Length: 357
Ligand SMILES: [Zn+2]
Image 1 (cartoon, rainbow, N blue to C red):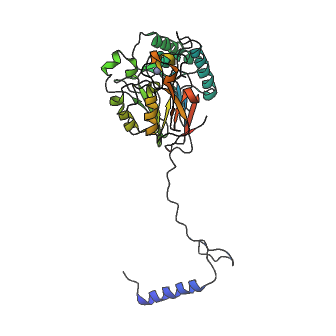
Image 2 (cartoon, rainbow, N blue to C red):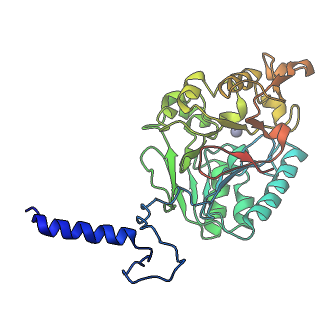
Image 3 (cartoon, rainbow, N blue to C red):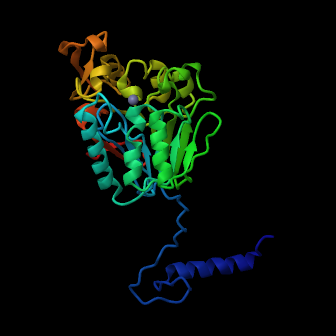
């Protein structure tokens, strides 16, 4: 329906009069005092979703436990997941190195947990350099749940660890190809996912490394994949999901892991090798990390940076001579506990990590 011409003319004249008037009106249409500002109508701000992470951080700490692994993931809500527990302080053949490493790990955890519990103790596989230190952790710290892969249940490491858990009333759970539930509730902006193959590979029967249970933690755009000692693992770790920001290098930088296929799939931006110093403790027997792996990782991480990592470049560890250990130019986004000691990496969830210490 159109407005009749006389009415339209009246409306136009009223509008013109209002436009010429020097007396502003407020939102209610009442006259405002002279000099008052006219406020332009403001559209309500569009609803903006809070940024993922909300300013919180996730920290991944790789402790210098010599030839072994222990890494603490502190989730943005303050809960803690400890992946592996280093070696037993009394490991035969390790000498003082294992005792020193165990003392260091427990002191570091006292500082970093600051009285909070370990919400999940995750043992990737039953080898002593991962499970051997679990009884000492369970004896000293409050642990909410203990998980292993259910392998080698009659072996001394698993028996000692499980006994220690049960003695403290800690629930013992198995995660394996048939049981993937985590005893850890989801948190805001955080997903914790077991990385377990559809079935154990046949090689698992004679090589415990092959049945390592991995753990992936995603926090907004940042992620970390902890692989334990998974070897020749690319065919099963290919199911890791999307690429990861931070990769724990499997099996201490051995050349039986970290294949080009795995790196192509994981495409990490940062990586950490947990290994002992050359010729110290049990690394005398293993010679980790291998130069080949440091070079391969450095290529994937964008090329050499400022430093180098000492790595084994010989044929056989049991015939190692000092000249087999060489300084390999390494990426600045690759750390090794043998060189760097503890490595603590923090992320706000934006896909980047920065070293805290
Ligand atoms: Zn190991």
